[in-house]
Image (cartoon, rainbow, N blue to C red):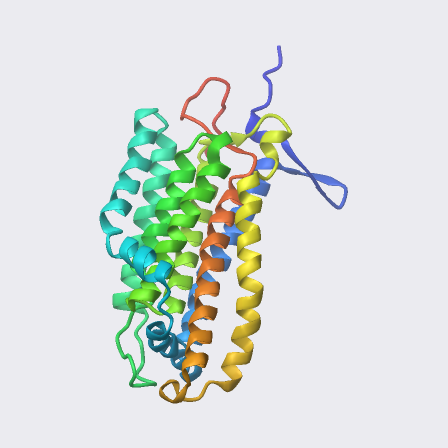
Length: 318
């Protein structure tokens, strides 16, 4: 009697030159592409924002502009939440890991640990040892790229998505994505970080997310979801993607105009500083929601299994 093929060997309904693409190869390929693109993005953003005078002037102008943009919500909610975010972020990481272990979903527990721990360790190493900040301006010489708080906030969000039941991923993604944006934008409002720090942190997490999803598939801890509905993008993914586009397009549009006029941050008027700060807010919000949305896309149609679960064959080694 022939042995049925593993679910992981089924094909994705996509074709290249008339030939079906194996499911495992397709998921690994898209995950690796995201991981590599994000890793390259971290370096490119560092060169543009930290190693150039115009990049440093923009970041420093945003730090100055935060004093001119004091809305009630930003200072009463966002800032307070960010200043008290250390314990909730640690609790979120513990919940992500503990929930997966309690359900005996050990691959998911390992995945959450790798994304959160790997992202945070990478950020600290890059900031303290690898990516120095040259003194091209004298306004704010401290080095802060990438942002540790934003890294942990986005990584915990991805970790909670990884351990959530598949049907709840989209809803969980929206909730944790919004909370992560509050932390990321709060670091700007407090003055802990520049906008490039938060955007770079999102790309660090995306690099680890892509590598982790690819690893789960390669070791046989993930299989193709059954049913067409389970393989469709969730509503939560579309909501986050819409937020990313709605904030990203005007943010990039305004950024281009501001960079052309930016010379010396200390000579900018109040309205220009407010404009700079609002633009940075939009770009950071778009980066966080975009990162969480991409994490959901990488998990689209992917069921995370227990190792050795019935009916799930591991891929051969070698």
